[in-house]
Image (cartoon, rainbow, N blue to C red):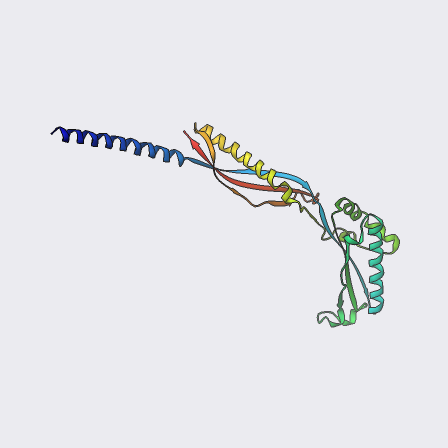
Length: 234
C-alpha cells in the first residue's frame, strides 16, 4: 500500500513538472515567434564616372566617292577638336557611315529627288573624363569655324552618363539601410511596449541607379531597400 502511494506521488510530481516544462516551452516558442518585419531605405547621390556621347553628322549628295571624302574629312575635324580639348584616341571611335539611297526607296517621288544619297555618320566618345565631355558638349558650335555644321539639337543627342563603381558603395549603403530598418522596428517595439531583439532574417533589395533629375543626368541617385525581420521580446 505504501509502495503504491509513493508511486502515485512520484507520478503526480512528474506530471506537474512535465506541465511546467511544456508551459515554459510554449512561452519560449511564443516569444520566439514574435517578430516585426520592416523595410530600410538608403539613398546616395553620386557623380557619373563614365560617359558615352555619340556625335552624329549628316550630308547628302549624288556621288558616293565625293560623299565618302566629305564624311572622312568631317570626322577628322571632329576628332581633332576633341583631342585638342583633352580627349585621346582611347576615348574616341569612328562608326561606319549609314547610307540611304532614295532612288531605291519605293515610297519616294523620284521626280523630286535632288540628292540621291543621304548619309549619316557618328563619332562616338566613350570616356571616364566626364567633366571634359560636359564642357565639350556645350562648345560644339565652335566646329562651325572649321566648316562642320551640327544641329544644336544633335549636340547631346543620345548622350549617356553612367556610374560604374557601385561595388565601392554597396557595403555602406546596406549598413545605412539596415540602420534605417532598425529605427523603424524600434518605433514599433516602443509603441507595442516590447523590446527589440536581434535580426531574424534580412533580404537585400535591388540597387537602383537613376538620374537625379532631367537637368543634371550626370548626377545619379543610388537607392537600395532592404527587408529586415527583427525578434520582439515582451
